[in-house]
Length: 359
Ligand SMILES: Nc1ncnc2c1ncn2[C@@H]1O[C@H](COP(=O)(O)OP(=O)(O)OP(=O)(O)O)[C@@H](O)[C@H]1O
Ligand code: SF4
Ligand SMILES: [Mg+2]
Image (cartoon, rainbow, N blue to C red; front, top):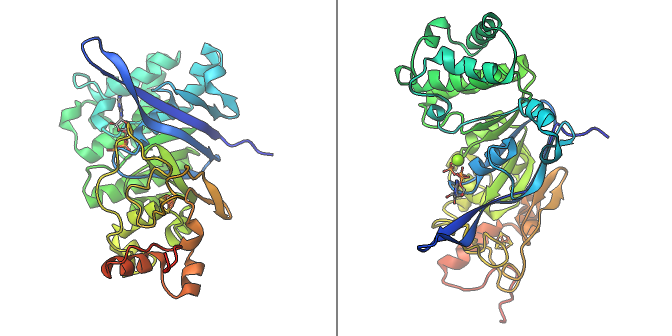
């Protein structure tokens, strides 16, 4: 049996919430609440979900910037929390994180040459000339030249900064990179160039990506598999095209519905979910999507929390009613589950799918 390059098991990261004069802990914010993922060498796995669902916290906990509250990250089969410090330092170099905010990677008072040299100086014993050679070759690989190394962060465009954030981790020769919204706040043409660069670097350096994004269109282009997160948990995962063509969790459908030309079921899937997600401090009882779900069923969805369960080859969803969302079932019934739900709402009826008219 081959061991996945990156194996994340039941990873949790809670933040204590303090209040009062004594600054006592009065609650726990469950930013990441039991995420398990396996990533093979060379794969790109997408992590998607609304703002605040825990994508960045997951990325930082995988890399070790945040200590996990519970769970384990295995890299090359080795549990990171249980390694001796020296081996951990060596292995951590193979697993890098690229910040959501590119400016967070650089000291505003340092020219880029110093910022790119700094990780090499800290983690290797290479002499200055060898370090500079490495920096120069990586800067060329990300499509920039030596002139950019003389500049300070505020003297670079958004696209150039993104390239240099990649260069800063690539100098360490990683195997896995967690990319946190690598094209955020770039215009569409620069986004396209960065995505192309990421694909080129992936094959040139044999990289594996954990690709965090809130944009399913980008995930579709870049990712072999996708994990959809809601309030700190993965609610659906599978091969990207399978999940996008046959989404089996209402939340995935809602994300797709926000992008009209990606809605697999056509116009009836529009505007399914309204409002903001609840605070991760006060999770709803049972299914954590229940407060927004158009398919919520009293007594079922609020009784317990659905676990991820297989709904197809390599495809899992955490929803008690995922079978009703199958495209094949919908076609048999002649109407999409969401279409029926919306028709009921329009007609002012309270009945939900699965309940009888007699009640
Ligand atoms: N250092 C921290 N201390 C306390 N709470 C935090 C901390 N970092 C994140 N959180 C909380 O954890 C939850 C998840 O935040 P996170 O930044 O991981 O979300 P995200 O999915 O990356 O959002 P976005 O798409 O806006 O970047 C949020 O409720 C956030 O307020
Ligand atoms: S379990 Fe119920 S509330 Fe949760 S997503 Fe499925 S139908 Fe909606
Ligand atoms: Mg984030």
